[in-house]
Amino acid sequence: MREHKTGNIGYVFTGKLCTLIVCVLAVLLLVLSAYNYTYAAEYEIGPGAAVIPKNVTMQSVDFSMMKASYWTSFPGADRVRMGSEEIRKLNAKNLADPDCNMYDLPNLPETFDGEKMKISLSGFADPKGLYLGRTQVTADLYENVRRNIRNARVSSNMQTRYGFCVKREIMRDIPYGTPLTDNPEDPEWDQLVLSPINLGDPVTAYVTTADGAYTYVRSTICGGWVPTDSIAICHSREEWEQDLDPEKFIVVTGSEIVTEDSLNNEHSNQCIEMGTVLELCDDPVEKIDYRLSWCNYVVYCPGRGADGYYEKHKMLIPFGSDVSIGYMKFTQKNLIEQAFKYLGKRYGWGGSMNSQDCSSYVREVYQCFGFCLPRNTTWQKAMKVNVTDITGMSYREKSDVFSALPAGSIIQFPGHEMIYLGEKNGKHYSINNVSSMGVDTENGIEVVRPRSVIVNCLEDTKRPNGKTWFDEMTATISVY
Image 1 (cartoon, rainbow, N blue to C red):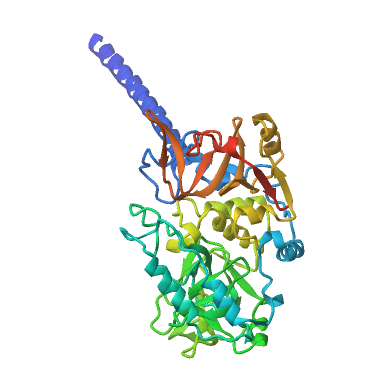
Image 2 (image 1 turned 135 degrees about the vertical axis):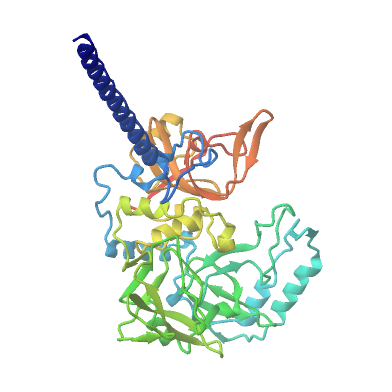
């Protein structure tokens, strides 16, 4: 009997122990599951993220802030703020405003004095203190460039030529392609670049250098020298005007798309930047470059014939590409999501290295909605939109301005601009493409070079002079 009772007691005890162990394991699994969920929610930046390095973000910026969705969970984020007609009217105002320094290309003079223009273009002063690699540039280099311009074949009465850019290029201050830097230890900062010019951008063309390598052109936002083979000249102004504003088009809405490799296409394996417009082809095309057109957009791309003149080429853009049919709806949610598609992408002054600087980053984001913004911070501040000059304001006064500022607005201090994200825990945040900033060290402020698109807290980010970005803010710009 006792043995029998003892056996039952052991059985009961063992059963309770097993139940306890199962419960403990279940609780542990729940905790681990919750931890994994939290980890994934807070720390994963992109698909497949697993181990996150410690040095990927700044003070007061956690991983959750590096998702666009973190900044778009507010009422009205999906509301359309401006329609296409309003945006067109704003673009027309900017083009007509001399303070925006833009070129209304169709209304530029159809003739020009080539002799005067080449004298003006060759009259540049020698840039000081620049390096070609590790060798300081001498006056001989600049004189050779001037001679190349002065020997151009021109006349006093020339016809303006009209064309399109056939690939992404950089407009330069002088017709010389090798980077010239102000620091032999920093070869990525070419002092003489002006602005990127993208596939399909219209241009007016003027003087071509004596060696034929460079042509001076004007785009909507800038004038400068580009390699002659990067543009295609139309046979007539009428041909150019016909293709200026296509009725049906797609817009590149990824940070870039790369065209597929093809042995028979000059646009093979080419980067096409965000905001680029590609005309849709209505023709029932069955095959392009030995491929059926199934599951692809068929688009026209500006091409350059053997004689340098404009041709329309058909090209395939896969349905899986990050593009929009027509311009995107202008909502704060869409704007912020577009800005975050560049997160971590490199900085390139003037668009060099197939990248963007601070203002071209902002321009290309806004282009997805049909906006055509001026080239740089000063000229954008001249736009006839909601611009608030906050120079000299106290912290409290600036905070009041920012509290009323719509997310997605442009914010600036001299020489740099950002896209405003919003306020969290009493601090203000932006996303921007930045070259350099200051950080506190034991020996004072040290200059560091992120040269990437980052999310940052304005109060905790410093300039090389030791002042915070928020203290240095001088303007806010809201287009609506």
